[in-house]
Structures are given as structure tokens and as C-alpha cells.
Length: 165
Image (cartoon, rainbow, N blue to C red; front, side):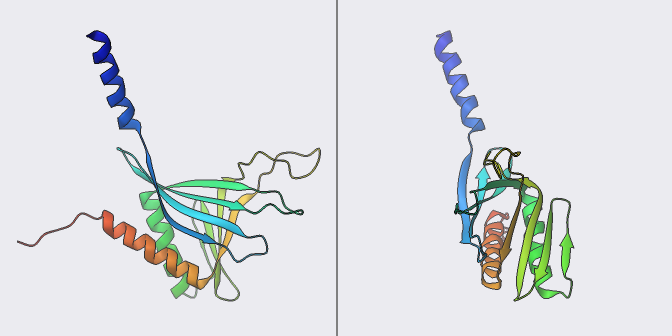
């Protein structure tokens, strides 16, 4: 009896720590070295986190890097708001604590995450230290609009509904 009660308590406890991941947006960048960027949402009982993960293609000249950055709900809302503000303003750059958004030519935005290093655990050259490239990718206007619209729809679904009676 004690053992079954213990097992039930453990299973309930493990279920409370379980996380569900849902992919929201996926796109390939239009750079010389194409990166696949995925924005997903990790859902758990205490808090929702947004994960931006990216991976570039391995070529003869470049080693394949992988990056993963976690953003809270408020940080992701700020990121999306910054994308929209940068698009509609005359500002050339928006600098935040973790990231930099910068307008570049041909109506594109360069996104750079300062605190996110490559976690592929590969070397950049023979007999050198491990790769420490920051996560940087370029978003064109179509991709930017897609990201903004999908993420805003996602935020709206999370908002509590107010009923007028």
C-alpha cells in the first residue's frame, strides 16, 4: 500500500514537471549561409517560454552551428513589438539587453542575440578553441510580416476572453 501510494505521488509530481513544445514559426534565411530558424513555445504548468532555435547548413567552408535562446512571454512580446517599430520608424537600430535589431539595405532586418553562443561543441579550425559564434540572422520583409502576424495571433489566443453580459 505504501509503495503504490509512493508511486502515485511520484507520477503526479513528474506530470507537473512535464513540458510540451509547440512549433509556431519556421523559416529559412536568405543569407549566403542559409539558417533554418524555428520559433517554438514550451508550455509547462508554471510559465510559458518561447525558444528561438537556429541551425545553419554544413558546407565545405562552414561547420554546422546550432543555437538556442529562451525568451519569456514578455521578452517575446517586446521582440515582436521591436520588429514592428523598426519597420515603421526612421530608426536604424534598436538595442535591448539580450539582442540588437538593425535595419540593413534592401528592406531587411539583422537580428543579433548577444548572449546566445553556438552550442554544437565543434572547433572553428584545427587546434583552436570551440566555436563561440553569436546567433545572428537576417529577416526580409515577407518573413518579418509572417513572424509578426503569426506571433500576434498566438498572443491573442493566450489572452483571457472578456465576455460582455
